[in-house]
Length: 93
Image (cartoon, rainbow, N blue to C red; front, side, top):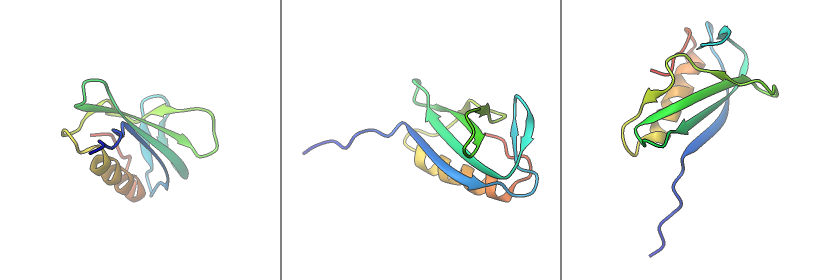
């Protein structure tokens, strides 16, 4: 049996809700965002970067790196997208 390739990152677009997403570099960003969730080499934490969709500049989501349960990267990313849609200055943790 072949083992499927391991997925170590997810990138998706999302529209931030009121209050947007909180970044370390520029504070809150809002609007149409691209979110990248990247599993770090320890396998237990993720780095989350966000940008205005179509921009070249990435920002660190506040609270990143954040812990993620083993094997739960996809679930963490889905949950994060939902939290950003709701807004409120979403953080990685």
